[in-house]
Image 1 (cartoon, rainbow, N blue to C red):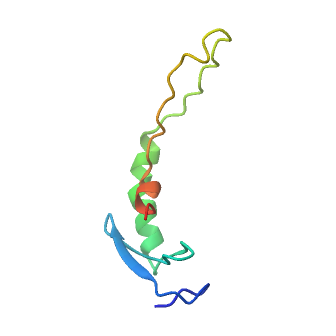
Image 2: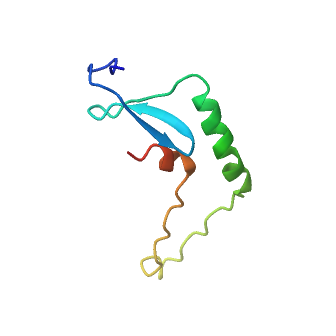
Length: 82
């Protein structure tokens, strides 16, 4: 298959059982019928388990000493990390 944007040959990769076609040149991503539904089904349990907790505002004197928290990787970032 050719990329509709720049006519580059698309590369197919399998991520968590979902076949994703992407262009190595423009980084465009194309999904076949039903693949978006698979991605939504795979990501649903992860989003349901997360509870919203507002972050505490740092106190003025120690805001620079707090270690940065590493952002949790989501299923979508794992799927589309080429």
